[in-house]
Image 1 (cartoon, rainbow, N blue to C red):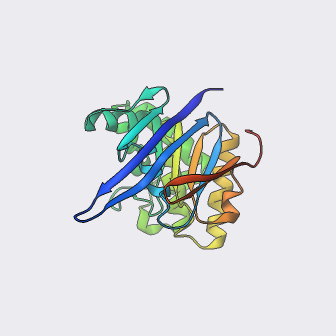
Image 2: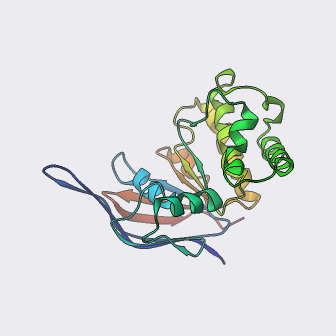
Length: 231
């Protein structure tokens, strides 16, 4: 099975004025194509730091990280940006949509950064907005949508570039239980359709939607549990 993520002995340190914080300590893991992995643990355990390194938003202080067989060590900022745009879709807790753009324009942004032609942009944006049941809202602006609808748009934006890996940071954190359940049902369906997903969550109920659960504590993997086979 194809490896999408491979980490070996990854550490992350932050140097403060008086003390060094060791956010990640010797993380080693593999994530295969088609998996849905939930990363859980208490606040401050390193979940978001791990996701940031996977998403090339940050770099490891020590250790190796490969995404889609690309060694990320020593990459320049523009190289990291290019790899992130081509291989990774990111869904943020706070949606990170641009208020003065329409739904269509928000979802199209990753493709415009790749200089994809307009006809293909329209086709792919329509496809992913239909997939998340939001095509009928293509001309709306984010502030005209509910939180659950905005998260669906954020998921569509992550999907539109056909990434090898979708990273999801607390997708239900700003939603009520009804909208949270709908977003999780969508992520489960996307995984069944073939998307590889890594999700950070503090909600044990939603973490059970994954194939595999990894629990962090003090920057280390303390338990790893396979919940079911890859679809």
